[in-house]
Image 1 (cartoon, rainbow, N blue to C red):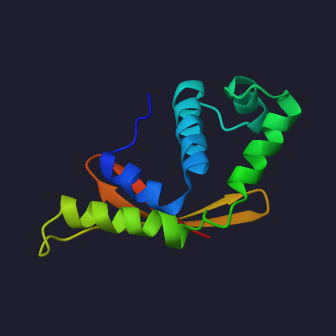
Image 2: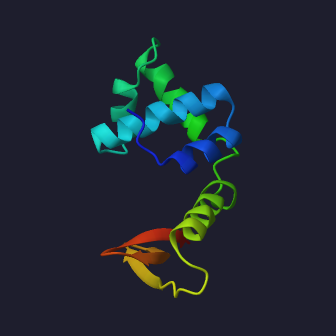
Length: 123
């Protein structure tokens, strides 16, 4: 079943039309069960009655939508979560981490929460 918090679902329903939102629900369910982000593997199990190659293309088109921007999807969800999770006078800790993978540098900003960190932004 679709396992995202209710406020995620409410916000995402506003950002996507119904077919896109249903595709997102299926994709999240697949990711949670399959535990891989390989497009071909997800397409094999994607429950659409079309050929595998067409399913891959459908997923590629969906993931290429202009709606998928950190500023329009992730930041508002994160802001809502922070506003509901913490009191206004409580300190929030951010962690900045840099990782180098071959010739690629990744700078990550994360929010410390309990025993882990939630990615906020990366470049």
